[in-house]
Image: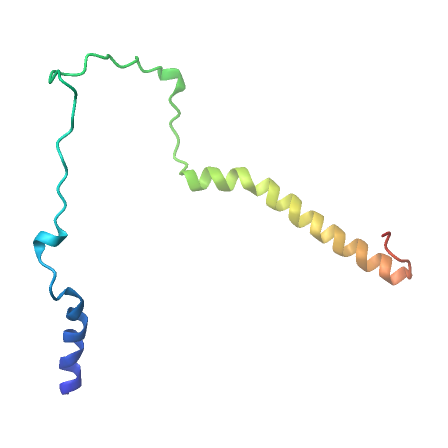
Amino acid sequence: MLFALWIPNAAMADDEGVTDDQNEQVIPPAVTGTDQSVDKVTPEPIDISKIKVTTMTPADEFTQAITPLVIALGAGSIALVIYTLLSQSKGTKLPD
């Protein structure tokens, strides 16, 4: 029973001696130059014809692009195994 009470103390030992000041990170203000006004560069207009609306995630797009390669490599490996088995069963040697 007493052993169960010591387990949380071991877990809290890592936080000893660390104060909130040591974990706090200060982010400096952004420097915009000598002129503190709003950026005068206007953005380019958005070309609506280049916007692609889809429900596919990047992982889905990757899977769609890589599937033909995986199928081709698998089929090539199977063809190589069949060729090797057939050539060994005939007693012929593979070319060097």
